[in-house]
Length: 469
Ligand SMILES: Cc1cc2nc3c(=O)[nH]c(=O)nc-3n(C[C@H](O)[C@H](O)[C@H](O)COP(=O)(O)OP(=O)(O)OC[C@H]3O[C@@H](n4cnc5c(N)ncnc54)[C@H](O)[C@@H]3O)c2cc1C
Image (tube, rainbow, N blue to C red; front, side, top):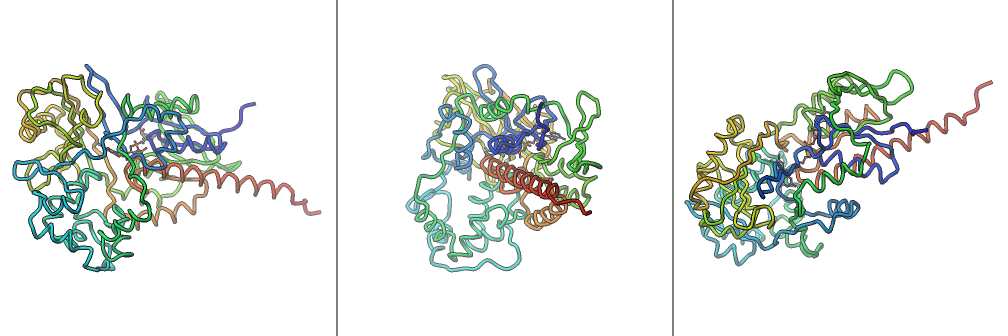
């Protein structure tokens, strides 16, 4: 007899797939419902004419939870590590400036004025305390380091990670470590130095796989076997009228059906999860729908090596908004991970949109591609048109950890306490990076298992209570 399914995970992005993987490790029977025909969500790799385009994330930091997952999946041998010393650049006044990564490099950096460089070096001697009201990333950086560092160093980095606007992003939610360092050490530089002392090991490497990012997602879905069910959209969940557990209303091949499970984990973006839980808890729905998302377009261009005058030695370039270009930044894929372009070619991938320029993502792909092509050609001294192109648009790309985000998460947790058996995971919890999603997925799986164990004990205890005579 087949066992009844204990947990349904809705959504097969990295959050849902890593969550299902952990549930299986814990011996919990699980089904993963995915509305698309393939798993992976935002992560995707397309191969065409010798170019390997990454349509979402270009790489990931191999943090402990990700490495554990990769080892458990037995794909460590397929990992590609980027050169940790690859320089990153900022485009300023029509030139590329290396981002200074060490105190001597800061002293001699061409990116920043003398007074900004001095402010970075001297910050460790200026003890400060965070203000009581929640502070935006922009206010924090202006207070500690001044406007130039915000505009030419931090804001470009923020758009690289969150596609966000530093004026709205919450320091505490988006960069909790910086907040902690100021709170504990009165200085970011001292906090960073202390953290290097307390965890001196090598920093997590920037990685991809020989066959691209899809390797991780395809291995996760393959391992789930028939427990991965693509082409099924979850529409709503409700508490079952009888027998406990939940009823999930689904649409599969245009047909409406329902499914009963003991517990549900929603691994869909917050703006989808909000609609799915609406019938169960309107307040939970309201909080989830309150998380804003920024649109992003990913524009990959392949060129013959001879077309590009820049040597492309490094990670890529970030572009401050002050430079009045629409490209937020460009990753030099073929320099980071050889094999992503034919040997006589290069591949570069740019990002546009984000919270500071959302409209561009609604333009036609060809229009977005030509805007990026013109700007990239100027920055990297490229002659002629690209020989390969790939444009991917996300109208709701990345969740914004804006001011008030922590309060939204508190409300969500309060509402979840009234809906035992329902769990949420995704890139709006701990952070948007793949490592954060793996960690959040694992936590949701462990909470669901603890819930099922407690339910089982409660049922067993009830069945041993003698009936009143
Ligand atoms: C352009 C871009 C670049 C990025 N670059 C990087 C990077 O370089 N490094 C990095 O670490 N991170 C990067 N990120 C962040 C990272 O890719 C994401 O945060 C992460 O992939 C999100 O995974 P997820 O599983 O939470 O959500 P998603 O990937 O969105 O997965 C959700 C899944 O739910 C499914 N779904 C939706 N509705 C339903 C429904 N009703 N029923 C069933 N299924 C449903 C979707 O089809 C999808 O498969 C980037 C993100 C973007 C957008």
